[in-house]
Picture 1 (cartoon, rainbow, N blue to C red):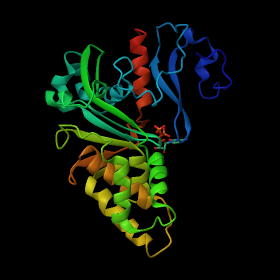
Picture 2 (cartoon, protein in one colour; picture 1 turned 90 degrees about the vertical axis):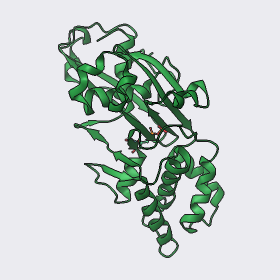
Picture 3 (cartoon, rainbow, N blue to C red; picture 1 turned 90 degrees about the horizontal axis):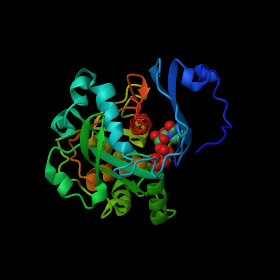
Picture 4 (cartoon, rainbow, N blue to C red; picture 1 turned 45 degrees about the vertical axis):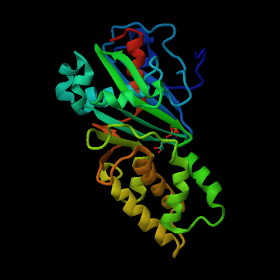
Length: 310
Ligand SMILES: Nc1ccn([C@@H]2O[C@H](COP(=O)(O)OP(=O)(O)O)[C@@H](O)[C@H]2O)c(=O)n1
């Protein structure tokens, strides 16, 4: 719990210069201490908020992996799907989705791939029971009720498989002679992935996947997508570009020294890690309808839900 705040947010949140309980505009503020930087998310939640700000209305989230744990009590990553699905992408179906069992609406949902600095996450709503049954452990499945719907999600966070963590592990292996082309680089990054990342039973072609964070950032750096609009990429696009960048590096000094390794790692993670096919299409976005797409918004909604605020 925060007892005092050392941050002056009055410039960002003018409406909170009045007591929060009397505010006509309601914001949720979330501090995200990531492995590569700390962010503050300010989300405009409701106008004319009738609800009470409880004493524990400000708190530090449990869990170390950005709140993305698969414990049923803190299903923040799954909620991210709900946010994308209910609030943004399938707005037209919103009313329908709020009632009934969500698995029956699985065709309307999107999967999420997130690549942070320290960890990487996968979350989707399976259509087949076998995907849940064949998950390695109970903690790959999150069951929870949210807004009158029951979810049973495949979700896992791999700590140590983020992009920066993978760089560290791979650099240790490659030593000083790191620039040895795509093939050797792939062999090294494979060691960070093989036997660690579980391949879900049902993945290929059955879900639309959205990829965030470093998937997006590095695709921009590689010139594969536009920084503002994002775009659609096949897994093989990452592979093709990785090969080009790595093999060019053996001849010329690189502009971006880590791009070869990063693109190779992303390719390996998607293919040999999660088991996506070369032809799988990923949607890379940073913003949806002008709102930064992130787990934080979902976490906020979940928090309000737990406080019985609707
Ligand atoms: N100040 C910062 C630092 C990182 N980031 C982004 O955060 C993502 C990496 O996520 P992260 O640092 O939270 O990593 P994890 O702690 O989730 O492993 C990248 O897409 C960075 O571009 C940001 O938006 N602002």
